[in-house]
Image (cartoon, rainbow, N blue to C red):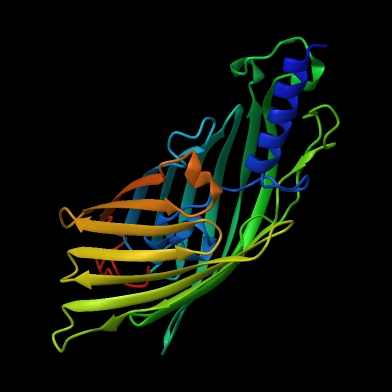
Length: 319
């Protein structure tokens, strides 16, 4: 066996460990920056909180110029039903990291209770993860090595739950979107680990909407997200944005693990908003990466015979 083959193999194993969450038990779920505008990414109880039908498409290009870095396509849609007493949602994403690809499709349901102080939602989601690996994309000295056998369509079900409280002034939620530690046992990289396991995640998210002038045309929205993942250190985002006339939202986030994030949202019309964020990498990956781009477009519309008698919130209310 050649020395270059051993080096390539060792390097690949190391990169796989890093990209798959730095733990033999963890498969990394994508970290998004624009959950600020689309909380369904984090919490199934968020379904229906926009009242009208709300659909979002997102693209995330992480660690630009870093070979094999994550690229993610994401689609979500949710709406309230039954005079805002329930919400339904859908999540679809395609996440690719090096030779690995992971597709998820989840449906979510929330039961919404109206109280004098706001709305309390309890949600569940269920769906499928599909993990694949295509090692033909790698430049191997020995393509026939069984350690690099392709994996196609390794399908696993999962489910999760969450709670979410919100009104025009504050929002707060807690969720565990993936409860099962599914294993993908037929993925074997020279016995470096005997299986990849999907990690369990815990999210706590909350924030305020505070006016900065008497006319309430300028508002500040501080918020925080705490992420807990099995096999990884606790991490958090601290976010602050300023909203001008409900037309423009400009903000910044500090992510303690690896980034400072700047983001902006434009109101294009009564139905469309466009959002962009840039993650300024602060970890050692900065030496090989130009940061992370994330784009999102959101479309909201009333559905005839469903939303005609309800008041739809403004785009920036209880994100």
